[in-house]
Amino acid sequence: MIRRARTRVLVLALALALTAGIVTALLVDDELHVLHSYASAAPYAAAIAAGVIALAAGGLAISSVRRSLRELEQVTRDVARDTTRRIPPLIAPRDDEVRQLAEWVNFLAEDANRSHQALARERVLLSAVADGINQGVIAVDSDHKIELLNDAARGMLGVSSSPLGEPLIEFVRVPQLFELLEADEAATTEVQLASGVRAVIRSAQKWGGEGRVLLLEDVTTMRRLETVRRDFVANVSHELRTPVAVIRANAETLLSGAKDDPAIAPRLIEGLHRNAERLARILADLLDLSRLDAGQYRLDVGRVPLRAAFEQALTAIETQAAARGVIIEVTVTDDLVVKADPKALDQILVNLIDNAVKYTRQDGHVWIEAKPAGAKVRVEIRDDGPGIADRHRERVFERFYRADPSRSRDAGGTGLGLSIVKHLVESMNGEVGVRPNRPRGSIFWLQLPAAPGPAAESEPS
Image (cartoon, helix red, strand yellow):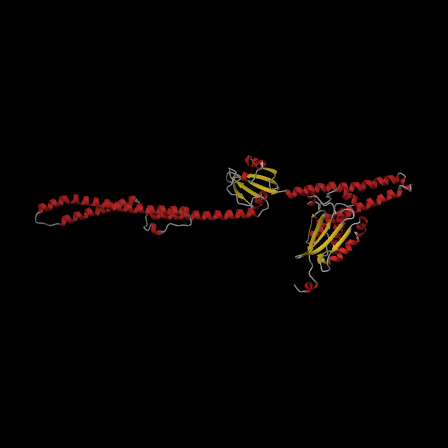
């Protein structure tokens, strides 16, 4: 640009010199020697004048160029801060190098803006994908600072904020995890996080950059189910072994000659019958659970009056309650109707009331109450027995789990009743649970959908 300005100045000076020479040659005067003197000095004067004019024009051109460059510099700085801005045409109105430079700056800004938008779309897409999976995803740089943390990882770590750029060690203090980050190759480990979550963590190097990507899988439920399965196998083996051992021993004793002893034979035969009945109950309960797990337990859900269901269930418990001196009080109104399968509801109520009678104290009390709870009906069965310790309360609905195994077996339970209750209630879109009864005892509760009245059922949908 400066070279072009200097060229323009030289052309202007040459034009001025030629003009001065022509004017000098055309001068006509009587005094030829004066004219000749002036003609001899004119080229030098014209050159000096042209030089002065050239310097002035060059200074003006350079000043104009510098002013344009300063304006271009300021606007370019603004464009660098915000790629959505552009250099206006007024900055470089002429078709010269300044204008070309402005156009290239606008082109680069447009390209950078498109790149930023594409990067932002990819980041949003990556975050959406990461938040949409159940596994936790953590990406860290070479300094172990967090670059990406999805919702699942936040839940596992117990983090509610967005700690991007923060050191991972501020949120996870598990030595095994940082050993994964320092490892040269991909590795896997299982750790217990501070939030109580048990997680399998896999690490891998980031593609195209330094740092690591961690994939966290919550295996808490899986490990708990494995424990339940091991306990189930051990418990069912034990439950079957005891009656089988009694049946075998009594049969061998009878075959050895005790069948002819009128004092011993009836007792041994009664033991055979009792333990055979126990085996039959265990197998029946296991079959029911198997059908419930496989979705093969057929339910015929309809309107069931709750008071009539309790009266029928109590007929199976009255004899046992009278033998232990337990008083059962029922507070259920006639207008409470639930949506349930009658046979399944009877099995649920018999199990819960039977447990309350068995495990309450001698000459104790059992209270049965039902009341509306929004769109459901809530049933509570309370007793004044010894209650259930906190560490057992969450597991009482597991198969074969017993808070007091010796008392359960003495009472003749299989350890499967509450598990069946939970499955049946949930199959009918209900809920079931247990909580302590103050000052003593337990409260087993269940909620089932309330059935609409006959008028509501007859209305067209």
